[in-house]
Image (cartoon, rainbow, N blue to C red):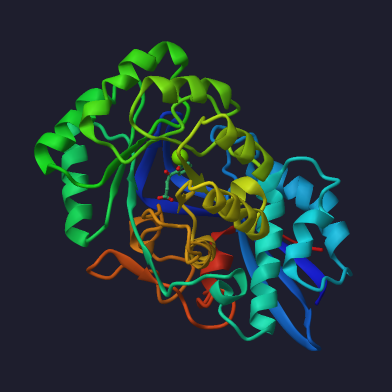
Length: 371
Ligand code: OSB
Ligand code: MG
């Protein structure tokens, strides 16, 4: 496989419903799409990826502008004109560039799509996926009131989603969880703090223990492992790390330190599909269940996530939901939807297996670059 073009699209789409985490509320999403062109076994193909960096450096230090800078200035020059026997070689080829996993992942994942299209196989097969449907859950942001939160949860349960995740922060935690349990009983429920607490809050977080949560996601800081290990000793709710797991090596350290019992995999955070497969395998070997996170992706990134989540150790429902919860219309047609049993079908067409509507991409594009 030889890559001969990398194209960048800086896009913005309004969200169907605002999304609020412990670091703020968003009404739209700005992201970079990556299109690659090249030759696989003598035939020309394209591939698409989506970088999950946001306009601001709040979830991660990367932003859409750093992604643009790093891809245009450093990744594309290493990729354009280069031949790879397999997309698993791409991430190691970028080793000289430290960090910037969201930039690397956007390009690496586009190359996996290109390769899978060239092999005439769904991406899931090429990644080693073993199921044709994935279990879907929803991530529900902080609302203006608990009543509003209850009505959102009611709607998502009625749609069939297999588990509910609510965002928490100091002041929007115990009361919210208590109210959800009182209203909905023993539904599969988990919480995500996006690093809003410190070890000083251990006693408060222990008060969540009786609510039988599936997990608490990233209670402490984004660069912390060891405080999470201390916290896990003080609470019975399983700790799940998101932000802290930037690399497979940090995951190994976190598992060894007993800093988490569950890991959330987002390919954008760890550098793409290859690093995600390695993280998935490491977790499987250590009896750490994994689930697939989400970053409010458009249908392009969402399709990649669905293929990756078809690997066997993704045993908990992921944050991969129907397109209509996020964007209307989505950049793909037909949009991604869930079945009544709360599962999503893995697309069976070659590559990511969804139809990208170019007019919609063009309409959402603020800036374009071809390298
Ligand atoms: O922490 O999982 C997170 C969205 C943006 C940034 C971080 C997170 C999230 C979500 C949304 O929880 C998951 C989704 O529905 O895509
Ligand atoms: Mg999270």
